[in-house]
Length: 352
Ligand SMILES: [Zn+2]
Ligand SMILES: [Zn+2]
Image (cartoon, rainbow, N blue to C red; front, side, top):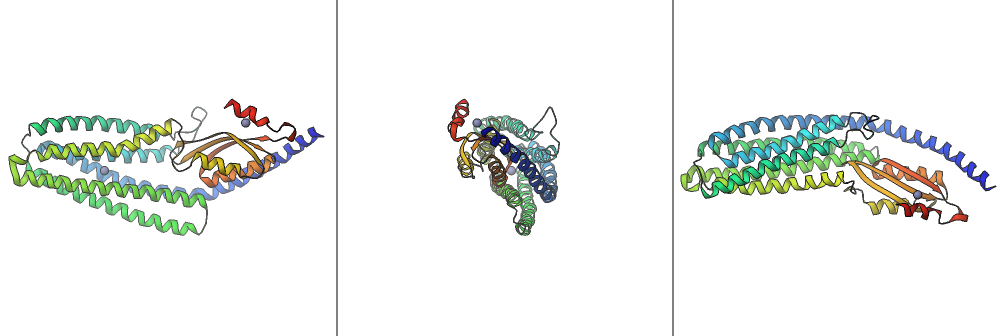
């Protein structure tokens, strides 16, 4: 009798799994076009911003060298860090289109993380060099071309204001779209748009910081321009301040990258919350061997063992719950709960 029941429930499970796959597939097809068009738009803005930044960075490197101003050079290094950041993001969008294959079963998502880490390391080397040079110049300030420095500093401010304007218009269009998409009341789409909104806002805040930095360079340049020889020291002072600022702005990115590589808990999806919610799914007796990690920020994976009285229903609902929480890749092992062997799952739990 018992055996018959087990076989019976397995049959029900197979049928349900088929339905589940169909339901999830339908959802996926329905979602794709919106995300793609959003990504294409983001890509276009990124490319424009990247081109402008690269051109201005070259101007600053040459101008910084000609005027002998370390502050301008440091600003150029900062721009380099921005440009590399943009390039990594652009590359990541292209790479995420590459399909996973039998050798790279998760695809190439983590290429973004590796790219970000390498670029930050390069920037830290440059920043360390600027810092040492800044300290040296602090004690023995060399001659600086005040006029060139002032012109470049003013251009820097103008350039940052242009960037701000570009990102502002982009933010407006994204918000409009999110309002339109709210009508679809599809949680995942909203979440994606929100995420993009957040990253655009972060970019705006970053540019705001850059604008303040440009204002700082202008003040330094004014000192050098009007004060002459006595105020050449303003240049290394600004340099030292900026190297510290750049270090602190790149530090969180490095920290996040290491966290992803160490398979840490994602920032926006908390382990405890997921466990609690899974335990509330109908039929669930116990949740164990739960792992939540990011393949890449925004691409969250989950594996879990769930002991359940109604395996097929639990599997369906748990998978749906994961999708709702924004977990793209879930693998759930459902274990049958038997009254005769109540604590069977404990044997499995102890293994992990
Ligand atoms: Zn910047
Ligand atoms: Zn188990």
